[in-house]
Length: 98
Ligand code: SF4
Image (cartoon, rainbow, N blue to C red; front, side):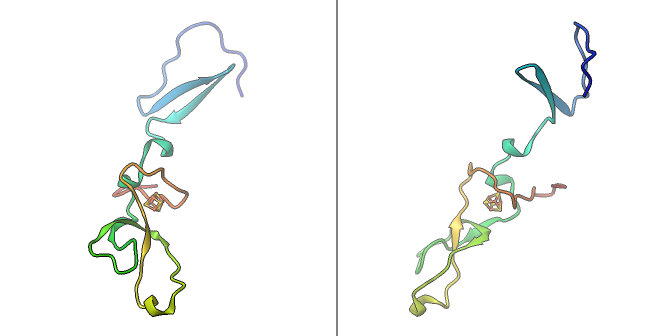
């Protein structure tokens, strides 16, 4: 950690951004994980979110629901992945490197 900065303006690369927290400046990639949403994730697909669902909706393939009733054990359903859903730790960028 460098504590020898003097007053002035410091230029950082375009792909980074700086955020001031108290007496610290944090440097991040310009688009950090918390700026992405479920809509940007490869695991968001069309599928079924409820038992006997009439139509498909946007679901997360990483979050299957457990079906407790054995009558419906042949169905595969998932938790919903809303367009602006907050990304989780399994986030994988569509066509990206994360
Ligand atoms: S919940 Fe996580 S894994 Fe599922 S679509 Fe959203 S970010 Fe991707």
